[in-house]
Image (cartoon, rainbow, N blue to C red; front, side, top):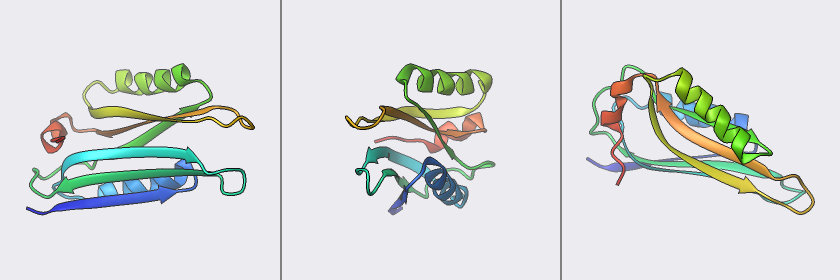
Length: 132
């Protein structure tokens, strides 16, 4: 059982979600070992960069539905977290990973918070999530 890495980078939240969710949908029997979400401001000329890295192996059970990345953003962390909490509360049977958040704070821009979570609509997908 070999370990594999998925890495995605997008200039927008939508671009990262599109790339990452297409990659996650292609995994048939992943056993996710770790994940890292990063969001940073590369300056006025380059703009924002969103990235996701997932380490997994293929020893997991076959999934009926794929894992999905979701990201909530706001200028206020409490609002971004509240949006994510509302999603979790509205979907109590979903499997939800831990939450990761990033802050972009530049003296010339407004502060921006990004909160990310990976979930699966099948609650039993927790068997495919074995963080190391």
